[in-house]
Image 1 (cartoon, rainbow, N blue to C red):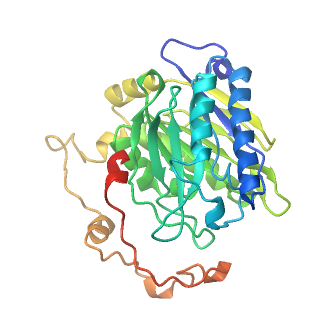
Image 2 (tube, rainbow, N blue to C red; image 1 turned 120 degrees about the vertical axis):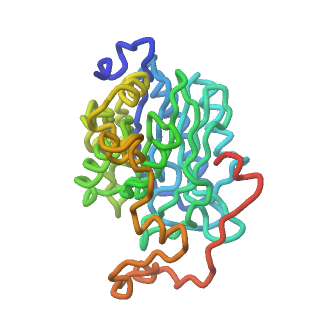
Length: 339
């Protein structure tokens, strides 16, 4: 059920639009300003295209393109003009928006960040990509965890970015924190198409939540992003999908109320519950230990694969980046209030 893409909106429905934005080339501050204006124009187009729209989502790299340029002159800040323009676009069009920025980091490489802004222009979610697509991406690993916000119609929403979705722990963490809808924005190119689809489906089914995902689209003269906007219901079925047409907006009504119902009433395959209550038919409440070695090792700081010493690519030098020398230390302080 998708309400004919949102044309028929139910009282409990949340109508979302995933923008398969044309992949830009952004090199200068002037390019950045022009692309900011274009994104704001697309917010207005999305509203005109679907008057019932609650939330419009732009893909990763929508503002900066796929150059991996870390030039400080084109990096963004939460209090910068680009985010201010996005806030105003949401106010002007009375719609929530999800946007991508490459965020200036005075302590090291920029963060690949995502934000959700409500229809009053207030920042409701702020996320930094936990798993940059190494060795290709130079971004600082995120340090804000996986936040969840209350979105339209009271839906609990989380945001992950691109490569994040290849780690099942990311979707599980989002669901564990209550997310009923998980947004996944990306800049992926065609070789990732198959894994993009089945991970969006498995992330939904394994956690009884809706996944709403979209990539950049079209060519910048070097790279070809694939679009492939898609909505997956909590049972793993695809309920709406797009292809490779740049600037197409894939819309769908999703039902967080039915997610809540399934999480409460499903017995077979209520995986997000049963994960922490193993074998509850045999033992009261199920086993609630942690039998997973990799979890214990990761927490203890001794994560090591059996083939750890044989891994060839362990930094970004194969993609032209210098070997890093700085140790990772997560940021603390006021910024973490959004986590």
